[in-house]
Image 1 (cartoon, protein in one colour):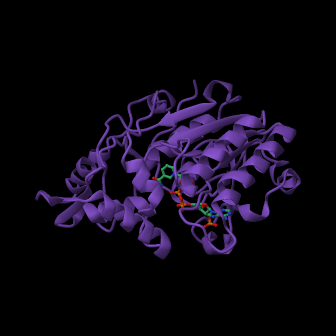
Image 2 (cartoon, helix red, strand yellow; image 1 turned 90 degrees about the vertical axis):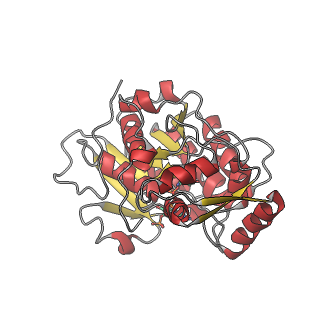
Length: 318
Ligand SMILES: NC(=O)c1ccc[n+]([C@@H]2O[C@H](COP(=O)([O-])OP(=O)(O)OC[C@H]3O[C@@H](n4cnc5c(N)ncnc54)[C@H](OP(=O)(O)O)[C@@H]3O)[C@@H](O)[C@H]2O)c1
């Protein structure tokens, strides 16, 4: 079993040129919350890392040593479109995702059709593919965000490439859009808790996810890890999770007030319509169900127990 390297914080600069014969790893969405931590974990291994962004120029100063490729999933919907992009790499790690659709970026293109085409290209070129998905996807969910991600998983599975679908739980860590909102909410004196938000969430640190994905990327085959679920060791409901995050900053307790479900549902739709906050209808669906990894592959990949969210070092600005 390959073990993950020690914890790292992004961006970790790549100190040396690629050693001869080293793996070349292509991180799609390497500028995002998950992608940055995957890149940081890879950068302490003797591998070459290539990163994508829709706008590489925006990130070049943050990653001065990185090799960037410009990629827009909505324009990469055929196997041929991906062929040259994956031709000179050994492993592709897909960390691309959108919380909300934008003018030309639909859930179906970004979460389903482009990953399907990518997986076909990986099958043709015999490249390994690690596809980052999410815990809690299920048939019949009335959310296009969730259903597009489930279709993406199924499409990757059907291609016959050497793939691993990685389903992480809710992530905590510095710099994540959702994580920053939840940390901020936890510090407010009043928490509104939707009555049905009773599902258990195995929140985990994004640094652990980066390390686990790096460990997978270093494996010669992904055959033993086709579908893996990752999470922390404790299942929190939403109210408990906010209390846990709050304890990182404050000794005082917040007043937790129940919110009627109809109001939470309208609020989720309003947030989607206004592109406001990470709260979406898809997340409202997830909050009402247990989303525990089964089994949890994180300890096996890390060679240690998952980091504990409540003990995480949290910087004041987050
Ligand atoms: N955050 C969590 O708690 C969590 C937990 C489980 C699963 N996930 C899933 O993991 C995925 C990534 O999450 P994240 O939190 O890392 O998101 P994020 O911080 O928003 O990062 C998204 C990444 O995708 C890239 N991207 C966005 N639209 C693109 C497009 N049309 N074409 C190509 N690249 C595009 C972005 O690159 P540029 O902006 O540089 O172009 C960025 O690197 C999502 O699908 C999410 O559902 C997240």
